[in-house]
Amino acid sequence: MKKTERISYEVDPHNRLIVSGRGSSSPAPARFRTAADGVFRIENGSTLTYHVKKSQDSNIPQKVKFSGNWSFDKDHNLVLTLDKWNEGCYGDKLIIKAGLLSAGGGSLSFAVATRDSGGKDRIYTLAFKGAWQADKFNNIAFRIEKENSKQDELLFQGAWELNGNNRLIYTYTKRGLKRGDKREQSFALKGCWDISKKNRVIYVINKRIGSELEFRVSFAEPLSRGLKYAIGIGARPAKKKMTLFGSWKINKGLGIVFEMPCEGGRVRTIVFGADLKLGRGAEIRARLRDDLGRDLGMSVKLSKKLFGNNGEAYIEALKSAREVSVVAGAGFRW
Image (cartoon, rainbow, N blue to C red):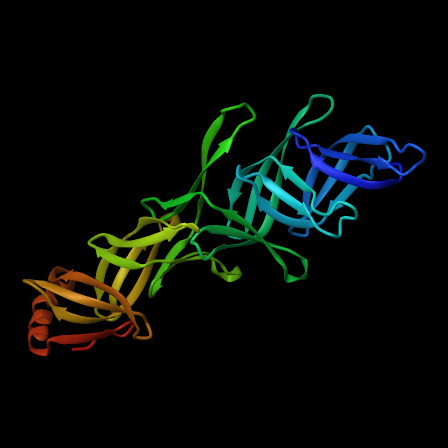
């Protein structure tokens, strides 16, 4: 390639790299614009490279390496904003039209479609390594591993919700190549919920690498078959309700138990301590505490049926004691 004063990069509608610039020869430096057939690759977790197969300019190197910061555009396409290490290209944006392929505990993959100069189509994959975390507005984000312990954040600002198995589902709208062509797409994150903190719920995806979503919630309403939370999502919070489905049980040796369905037919069991008081009729009110005895701000109504054959005995004990404390993990003390 001719020596130039400045080279700029962009990506065409078929995800091919376009190289353009002006030569430094005098008296009238010529402009050039070259399309290079090839594919993008992710190296070292986040570094973007373009592997050239064919171009109009034989001087383009076989592999072009880029350094910058990753983000999404409004259509969930991948955007790399080039940094100062890309000589003469600082601030250029490479927009790769990509479809989200899979979301793992520590990975995020995209499908990229391309068409070469001969009209041949191809689809390949770009994969990132990192961890899932929630931002301060309860949006979900994938934090990409980078060199020197730095991170980029791919922020998902669409709607997420839970299905009947407490799996987190993210839904977004993706525009096609044709004008007005829009499709609703979604992906699921596999994990289990931890509800043992006050005003917090945590979706644990891969605890070993710290891949978990910690959401701020304002209150919890225990239901007969679950827990309903109020949550705000977004910089201008849209108030919504989220329900974690499960069942309440009594374990004499552990305490108050909440069992939630998880992936693969597993059940997530969370043990609470509680302050028990007698309610109306055969009802017992339990003010829940965590494993350190801290008040979680939640009260649940328990039927004496949950206590089995000892139900009547527990009610009689509460009539005389008025209140009984249950220690999480240590069971009932009467």
